[in-house]
Amino acid sequence: MVDDAATEQRKEAAVVLTPPLALEGGLVEEHQTPGLLPRMLSLLRNVRPGSDLTHFQLPPLFNMPKSQLQCYGESVYCINEDYLTRCPRGKSSLERFTSVVAWSISTMRPAIFGLAPYDPILGETHHVSRGSLNVLLEQVSHHPPVSALHATDAKENIELIWWHNLVTSFHGTSVEAVINGKRQLKLLTFGEDYEMDSPNLVVRLLPTTGADWLGDVRIRCKDSDLEANLCYHKSQSFLGFGGNSRSVRGNIFHSKTSKTIYEIDGQWDRIVNLKDVHSGEVTVLYDAMKAISKLKTPVLEAPENLWPTESATVWREVSQAILNMDWEKASEAKRRIEEKERELQREWKSRGEVWVPKHFSVAHAKDNEWDCWPLEHSVPLAPIAVPP
Image (tube, rainbow, N blue to C red; front, side):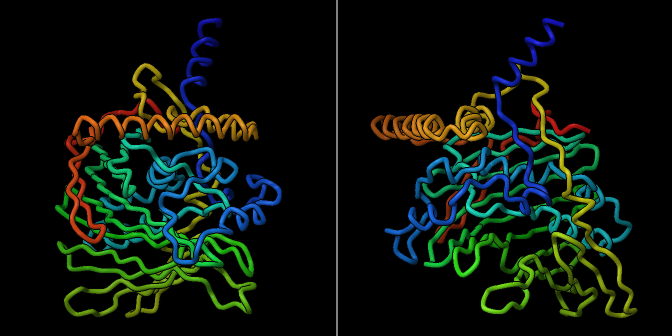
């Protein structure tokens, strides 16, 4: 019993793992500190509209206790009703494509107004397993910030490859985070490659506060000549009051003929329906309550295999201080991490060295276009796991 207790204490000291953003997480106010809006407005008082906030340093008061890499990863490995494994089980290319659209919607998680994850440091990693699915992320660039993701499921013969470049800007009454990049889902058994992008996150300050996912998402599979357009939008309201900010609408169609097969309509935090335009039949495409409600927090199962670059290790002091609402300690811990990174970059520059990612090969083209390829064929089992 003593040895078991000591092992648990070592695990707790190695990482700080917090509940994932779930259906409830974007709706409750308990995560927010009093007077958050006035403090946000004060923070942005000297920032001009249109300014790029990508490298803007947020004090811990405005941070949730997790890294951006963890947020990206959670959208893949934290799920109740598993929409991902449905994708390769479809009996036809159309059925598989429809499942991919549902899975894409399932990666949307409610944001918490006024709180943002940490900006990952260069070389930071996040490695988590859920059943046979193993997920690995790495911060492959700091200026600009680019995150890469590789996930494999040998049992289901699935592979995911993503890269994201987050660009944040201030627009006077709102802050917009544009998520440039590409998401690939490969169903290897069928030789099908699906490409999709992400909506943008808009944080509204006035006239009412809120955090909304808005914009268009395109999903396409060249192998089956199928395509989908989704529009995440805010329904009609009066002077910014009322309305539903989590509406999604779109269609699935043949790429060559542009002929619509299904119409999509609903709210991604509730129910999204699928209508067959030929028969008029309506079915449920996605149920948020079943998919992203009451999600389980990952746990550390093999501390001996934990990398020092793991997000939950890198930021553990900051996260613990935020959970304790010790803002002075959180600020000091965050400052040490950021200063250490700046010092390492100065050393590389003085030696004429260029940092190279450990898990990905990266190519940078113009206009914020990147390409990231995993160096390994498959992702190994992770020391952190989502409980069954």
